[in-house]
View 1: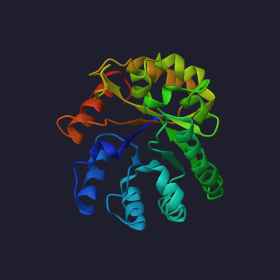
View 2: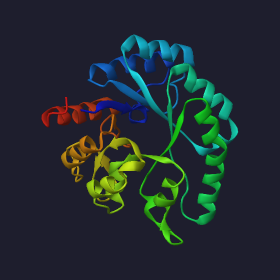
View 3: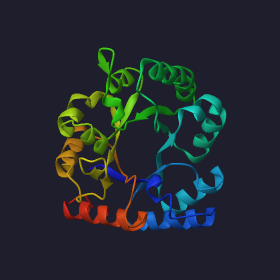
View 4: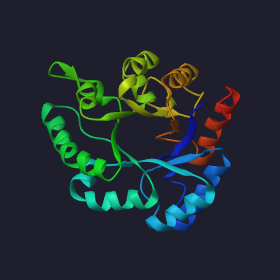
Length: 242
């Protein structure tokens, strides 16, 4: 069974200082997570963050970075990830409305991907729904997948009007990580089990694909990140995933 991690973007409104972020990591562990996906460092230095994660027994599964950081601060990004022992980076978001948008993205990838690989770090792409638009003769997400392995956000695949499990199976060779997320058809993410996505079917597909890490995320948690995540974990427990 895949291990569970939390995308810490979900908790972005739950801390203001490095000390609060450090305390929050303990609460993440207490909820039952084995790992985290970073969206920034919470103001902690790489050394202190690594020590805290080790103390709690949390793996740094992946992190999110924007294309401009990879383009302009690649050495800093590499040093940080090596210091915390994180061997995957997902591009968090990129424009994908035109061939020019994709060309700019692929120029960043061409520069960053080999340098990251030489440092032992795999570069992935995290989707939303806008990458399912067709540009030229092929959807943007398919063009991206020619260049990068994918961290698939299952809710945004659903929001794009796809059959999520069928799409996952069709792209299984390109998928490294999954974001497990629920939501409605009006682009409103929510806690697991509270939306219209077929979470149990997606979990079963993830098992068939042999995905090592499932990453829980909610872009807009209600009423706050920790309580929203706690409901997601209760749902996962109810369907035998904890």
